[in-house]
Image (cartoon, rainbow, N blue to C red; front, side, top):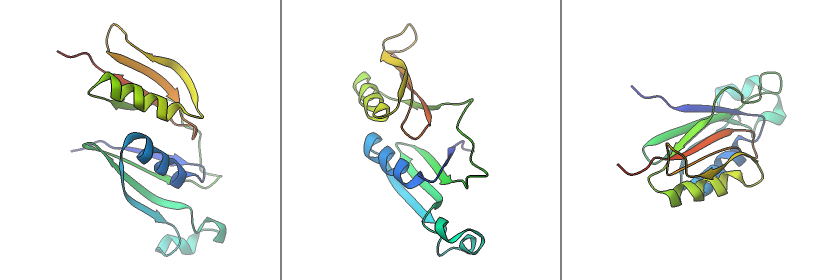
Length: 136
């Protein structure tokens, strides 16, 4: 069994996943627009290029997402995507990259429980926690 994060976006899923792949070194495995799928017949024409399903591999995990129509989109709240890194340098790089154009909630820093920990909301409205636990 696996647990994967699935994010909904307000029409900017493709831009978000392109940003995440570049910022975090992920690989986009799927970027499927509505147009050309059976779902394409059930959406407004202007939504044809919006993303029905996106999938990105990041290390040994998967991040997925799609665009949600205005009447179904809800701003992300009550969760954070938690990114675990192996080194403080990886944590700092991820934090700097993801926080560009976003809001820093807690600057990346050493804490009593982590070599580096920080919280932010990225430019797409997605909340993140970046964590690098200390070496054992």
